[in-house]
Amino acid sequence: MRHVTLTIALLLASFTMLYAQDNSGGSGHNSRNSSVRGCLGGAAGNYTLTSGDTTYELVGNEELLSKLTGKEVKITGPKGSATDIPPGTAGQSGETTSNPIAGTAPTIKVMMATVISDHCGK
Image (cartoon, rainbow, N blue to C red; front, top):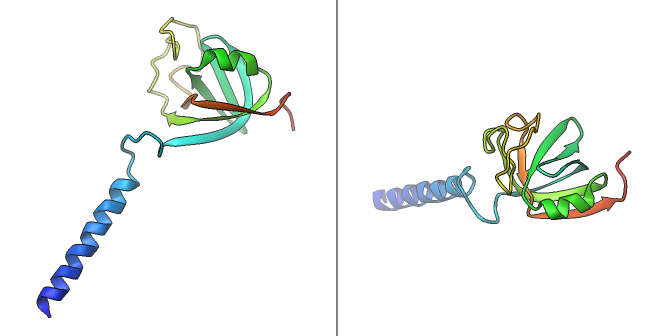
């Protein structure tokens, strides 16, 4: 009986550890993408997505973003913290910019963008 109880306890501990690893903040390719809907603004090296009271700095895929500025979009990609991109640096080309929110806003690396509406607004 003691061996059965020990075996069950070990199995439960193993499943708990696997579940914790699955839900941790570790790196993963597809499991960390988020989608945020909002208004796309800015210009080259300084694209932002405003969703409610939050403004995200968008990183990468600037050719696509340039075509969608001023529209309501859904951006999909991994979110990052304010420190993921140093102030004064562009997300894709490495050129320096005068982005006033760089380093202070949360970031999204743009993997996909979908137009929701041709104009921003409620």
